Length: 42
Image (cartoon, rainbow, N blue to C red; front, side, top):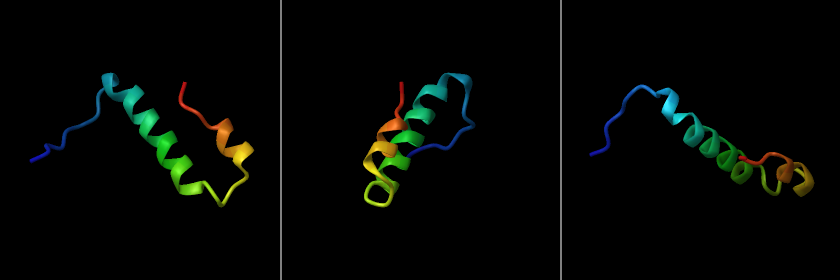
């Protein structure tokens, strides 16, 4: 069973990547593709 814990500084990169990928998935088809491509995890 997954455990829930507070995020730490070490989690920042993974959280940012999940945020960007979720945003892209949610708004693809609703926003212009050129705008979606601007929001990338680097």
